[in-house]
Structure formats: C-alpha cells, structure tokens
Length: 198
Image 1 (cartoon, rainbow, N blue to C red):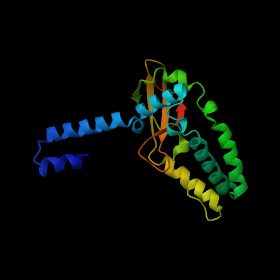
Image 2 (tube, rainbow, N blue to C red):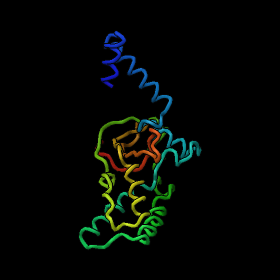
Image 3 (cartoon, rainbow, N blue to C red):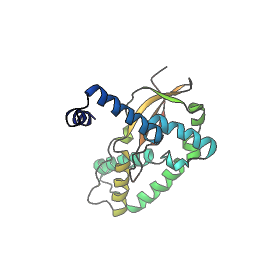
Image 4 (cartoon, rainbow, N blue to C red):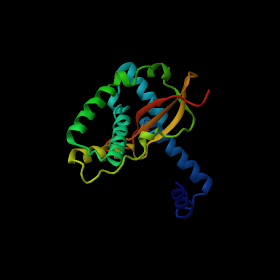
C-alpha cells in the first residue's frame, strides 16, 4: 500500500495525504462490493446463508478444512513416532469420517444465534487454531492421493486469519477464516470457538 501512495505522490504529484485518502476510499469501496473478502462480511453472508439459503453455504464456509488439517498433523506424528506410514485406505477412511464430522448442520449448530442479525464487528485478535498451522510436508512414502490431499489443505490454510467478534451486542466468539481453492480472494469461515473477551 505504501508503494502505491509513494508512486502517486512522486509520479503523479499528488499530495501524500490525498493519496492516502484516495487509497483508503478505494479499499473501502472494494470491501463494500466484495463483503466475502473481509471476516465481518463473511460472517454476515454466513448468517444470510443459514437463514435464507442464499448465498450457498459452500461459498461462505469450509466445514472440512479444520478436521482435514488436524488429520494431517496426526498422520505426521504417527509416522515420526511409530513409523506407521500413511496409506490410501487410511486417507479414504479419514475423508469419510471428516465428511461426517464436517456436516454443515452439525458443524454450524448454534452459530445462527451467535450471528444475531449479521452485523458483526471485530473486537480483538486471537491466535489461529493449531490445526491451521501449515500442514506437514508429505513424505516420499505417501501415496499420490495423500500428497494431493495435503497440497489442497495447505493451499486453503495459507494466509488463514482469526479474530474475536461480536454481532449485534451478543456474546463474543472467536472465528478463523481460510481461502477457497482456487483462491479468488474471498474468505470461508472454517472454525468457531470461545472468546477471551467478556
């Protein structure tokens, strides 16, 4: 951002204060046109999806990535400590289990009451859940489908963000957001948890 302001100030001879104001206005306009690119906008879209079904839930929530990333960390731990290698069968079984645990009605149970009317504000920062740390690199012994699974999870959690939020004066909560694959600049809600804020 700073480089854009410096270019405006030096090449176009625009005063820096005006350049910063223009840049802030452009960023604000972009967020209003693309609410799915901000955590607050994504939460509002999730509420709309839960209430009306539009936009489709898949456009605003990734209910699988939290458990997928956790599985990869567990598989890596078992491989390092016990020498148990990841097999295609283990990946298929894990994917079936993850789909069951990531069922949207189960994953998002109780979330609608947190979102109230969908006017959410960020009230603090929080750390990302440990599962969203970059998934371990695949070992040479991993089958091709396991390596592709790992790459998919790694692409989605790259650049994940988390924060603490409150919607319409309701209770505070933490949430984490990931990017879709392919990354179009939007965010998907991938985790809800408790907040350290009162």
